[in-house]
Image (cartoon, rainbow over the protein chains, first blue to last red):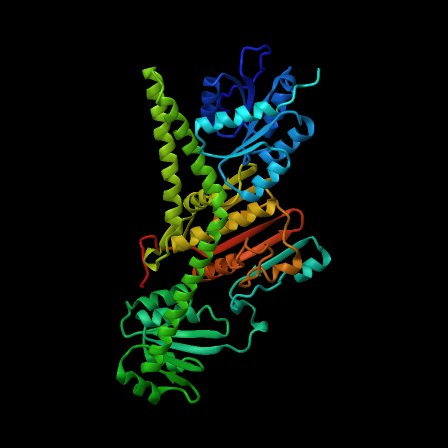
Length: 144
Length: 381
């Protein structure tokens, strides 16, 4: 599989926040990372829901993760399943959906489940950064 | 409807209820179910005769007992031989070789009708002149309707492609937008070059989607009929089907026999394959194994599309080829998919067979006669 920036978030105050990008397309992860890193965020990647669950359960990531950006149509554990898992197990982490397929019913259902934003690709960098900024305001600190 | 499925496996199903076997083929092979066939002779093997032959041979209650033409190279005679319809060099032999119900004179020769009236067997009717022309027009009309129905179903199916198309177009567009935004501020020339190349790749991917789909959506034309490389057609179908159904979690196994070929219309066969693959993947609900197989023997070429999905309940097997029959929710299926598939297969003189095991999966096997004449490229239109 192609390289992607999995691993661990680093604690401390050096970044604006820590974002996990979950998408099966390496290109998408690459541009989202590029945009967010320039805006001062620390970014980790996962290629599907299963990997995302692995990433958040690695090291101290579950304590440090601030926001997750998640695609819907992915192999293995898809976005819907991953979002259900994250809402259940990490309700403090705000979720942004970034999908290629605008589906009003799905958007409504996901927003009801607590997803904070539903963005449709292609999304401009400014809009993405604004969405992440809003999500950061809604995060809750991890219990110690 | 023609080609209504027969439940040849009903007896087996009674003892082993999990296994159902259904064969759909020319009903001529099941004479007990059909009334005595009308015995028809076709005189004239030009365009009109060939078109009549194509349609009449599909009708189970009609037996074409022979065909003749004053020109031995008339196109209909070759077609008749392919369909195992006896070809006669002399009209006399055709008229007296066996009992006849109907003589269809499509020669357009005004003297022919009188000659036939003199020589015909008692009790045999003759259709000639304007009446024969009317038949030909109706046959052409039926052929147009079938093509329209196929196209209508294809277009209706495009709705299900929306998610796949959106996914495959918006992802490269996201890359293009993101890279372009970055390029606006990028000062490192090496990075600029690399990102420009990424953008070019993404544009190429996007245009490939349009190319695949515009070629798939076009109307079929009989002028394209010819020999089809089945393996590459299956691969092409797989590329199209992935817009309609998510293949990410499906294991795909290909068991291709090299050089498997069949004769027919490549666009229609592509549509058949796309439909069978789409159905197979939908039956598996995103997890399972899709197997695509081709098998060539001296006499036949077989194509098999198998899934490890939910299987088809025995009581539905006799209905799945009926027009407008669907188990999908409203708006999700036209009920024309398998009906059109059956029509296309019959037109190619093939058969379609279904093996389905509840909870284990289904397997659709298409069997076509092998074509021994690789140089033959087109048929009359």
